[in-house]
Length: 431
Image (cartoon, rainbow, N blue to C red; front, side, top):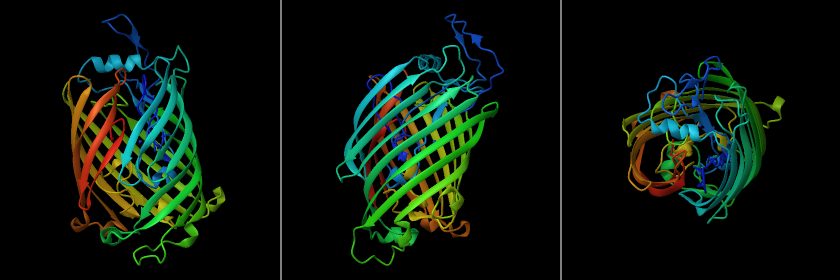
């Protein structure tokens, strides 16, 4: 999902639209607890009740979401209150992340939807205030990619932290042209495996402000605007591809909310803690949208340190949509790396549920290995979920640490599902 770096990396979700940045990009703390002194080295550190978090621009190379979903910059805490670190050096890594740093990162990407290509990302990480010992490090950055099937994207954005992590402000803007296959809507359409080529381009703007409500709980409004244009390159559409032609060229605009609770010990390589996100977006003509509909997502991640070098990560993700939902804003199996082993967008519908687990082992010389498995399903309604349509996917991969200060890993995975498999490359963990 993101980018490699020549120092440390702050670039992450190339999902610009959901790619670059966090969804170029998906936290909490209390300002009333004073810093406490570190008895080991005499330095002053934030209280364990305060979260330290840094953000990155991350590349999520999953299909149409590169332009369909606005980029989101995800951040997380460096010291999760209430969670005991597996090893003390994890905390030291979080403290080092408060230093300003430039990032320049070219690296290869590969995924089953867009093919292979090259990403170039740059970023600058910096504390807004030297006296603020609580806020995570802020960042500005940008990046672009080009792949073997002619897809390209560029995006820029920032995530800023103010007043002892009381406020978090995120914005992103980007343009893209993506080439992918459209399979239709529903499990039956995905199972047929019949598709037509689609060229989809456009531009997107995203802005969000989160306010710390209490403890590690944040809440705030968000806004997104997109102008998209898609062309179907096939001749006669297969019966399974029931796309409304008015959705091919459209503008969508929404106001929404984001509720987040983050207790991870590190943003780039969590070893303990949890992350919960609830997001709702409301598209209306009043806001300049061609269609009226709503989208909702829920995610819960848990990280358990088995030993100093072993981590077990678990994730649940849910998606729901209602109203006249354009085909590109339906829930897509395979997006956000839920579930790896399927082309993102081959299975899409109004509802989706996924769950997966991943075992991570650090090896000497900056290397590591992982193994993962998960299941997911899309459906038009809650009553339509059943065991017959479950889509299992799993695989393994290797890791190489490209930024030791923050434990940022280059990721190379192979995953297989019911229809085959594919190679996934990026920077930072899958979740």
